[in-house]
Amino acid sequence: MRISVVVDGTRYSDDVEPRTLLVHYLRERIGKVGTVSGCDTSNCGACTVHLDGRSVKSCSVLAVQADGHEVTTIEGLAHDGALHPVQEAFHAHHALQCGYCTPGMIMQSVDLLGENPDPDEQQVREGLEGNLCRCTGYQNIVRAVQDAAGRMREGSAAQAGGAR
Image (cartoon, rainbow, N blue to C red; front, side, top):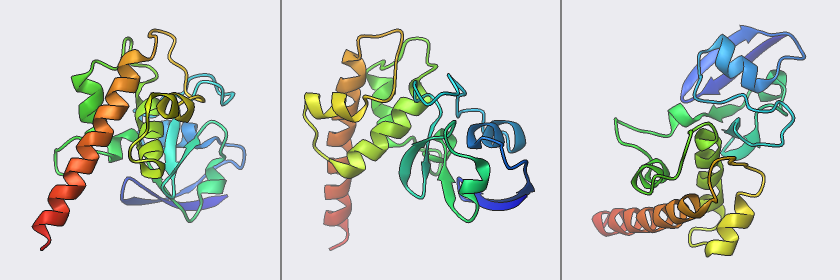
């Protein structure tokens, strides 16, 4: 089956097997290896990407379902060499151990902050429920998400002030 999908701002048109998972298409066909293939059962969330701006577990989406849509991967968050505020905050707070879950955690966090720009600790924990980290107690991840929320609010305020 022929699909056409925009991934991180670039259009790709490919023939794919109807049963190809989006995670495998992203990694194997177009080389977006930052999207991690964790459990292939949608339990861990390591493969989280954005489909038309909303987070999805790419191991539970077929590539053909992305036909005509836009996908953003962890590689697509940074712009003009600058990390996304969530990426910056994860780095600043060492919100990782082995790093395997980090791309999915970051992608889910970006979606969470799009829905709730000022979450409290419980809201962050609930917003990340479907993403598992086997190495940490989530403390640094929660701190990073809350710090990123502040960075994003400050960035929005600076942009609004500069737009006058």
